[in-house]
Length: 60
Image (cartoon, rainbow, N blue to C red; front, side, top):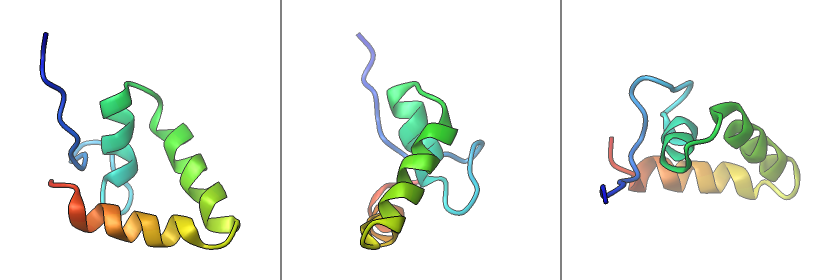
């Protein structure tokens, strides 16, 4: 059983690679993760804060 690690993607990124890294971790399309961030950002702005925190916390 291989150990999965969450990291920012260096191959599939637009801003910081957070959405690409999360998509690689869960083995889903990065567009779906990006769409979820946009939806969270539209409803209350929590997606923007979460993205900034994730970009700081998740290693490259």
